[in-house]
Length: 315
Length: 315
Image (cartoon, rainbow over all chains, first blue to last red):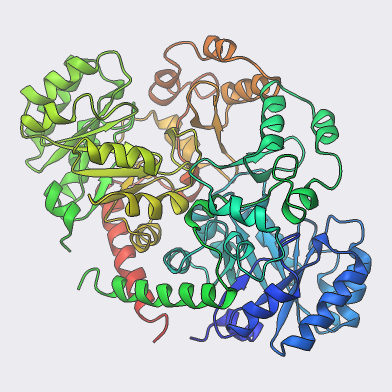
């Protein structure tokens, strides 16, 4: 299969692994890229020097194209940008910030830029900034989310209508069936986070992975809406947040409770009570930690199988 | 096309119009059924005698099968049940309550029963009660929603895995593309609310319809979570609710603000400031009020067109 996304990114399948904080270093990215998807190194939880090490390690182990995810809200983003340029990273996925800031600068260095959006309005803005593709992420996604709380099913058609560049669907996708659903709605690729967070090559703490695998319905909640809405797996910390929120706590109170380093504490160090555990609603579909290559193959095969079923739907 | 849903319901297309309060009387139901879908009379906003009148008017104008939606939380539900039995209604869609209460009783009278669920756990329970199909409704739907806030994209695969009976997708569906996405996820039919609320035959107040047509991203919010979560179109009343909620208002305070008759006031009487305006997130995809027959035809044609595109996706 060839489409605008595989051509843009140079991968075999239009399956992109999300660049998640604390989960996606070079090992996961290389495993996904080797399997035909696009591996992504998540810079959001890396110091500039660590990011450089991961890019160089990736290159030692894998010759295929990859991307770096740069959340634009982090304080070290300028150093990150400098490094992806110096290291000639082929693709940058920017998120959580203004695409006007770095898109042109990166592209002038030969880097392709895709931007993550949570609304058609932001998609239009990103397209105006010249990004090569947008990633439309619905509210079922783990981690930070848009204030409109638009679901992937509602978001995709509107974004596909709003922009001419290809659209990659994110949020709630962990299977070939969901990938086909996204394509029916107009997407030309998918970005998958939660499922790859549980992959064997993910750097998430084993206890965090185990907790994801035991998630059930209602196990994630959109929390901290007075700060930036973030989808969290339920634990003691999330319950404390929700109790404060139910009492009408201010942004300041919530920021004080959140403090610093909660995501690292939970997702990387495995403190399941006090850590901030970012994961998507689709977590409860995931029952087993598998090698990333197997995940890519299973998604792609199920995508083809579902397309075949659709062919017969009104035959 | 024939599948388990068209066979169960006796309709041409597996497209079910949602039985919405204040919008779906006999005119809308008859228009949808005449066009090949399944029309539904919404009993939730009708007195028992008015429900009987609507059933009888439907029968005067349309010979095709139809359904009555019975929200089980209403105080007059026992009288409603008596009337649907006396009037030999072919199908009942029960919602917002325990399917153990009336499913067997209705079925003993030859009535087919489908139940609306917001989780796989509730789907399993409904199947155990013997319902002929479940309607899996994601959090993007208008009106009352489940506490887990599961989106249609995440909900459908889990429900389809949980039960053997056919599954109808609801929430976020207002196009043939979305219908195909639902089928890719395992659904065999769709239930469509917001779009039909704006149909020319809908009994929604013209000003409410106009407000739906002008909705934009973020125009609906899941509100009143401390009572029963309900998706509302933003207006003065919704803003009052959200302000109280942000301050940590109790369920009692919210119930006092809500009072009685707000949905009628907004949706039927057209008081757009003080009324409770229930509508789905997909509202912003709807731009024009059309005859219901045209909506059914457009959805079905787009469904077939999208299936054709999928055929070529990896050709």
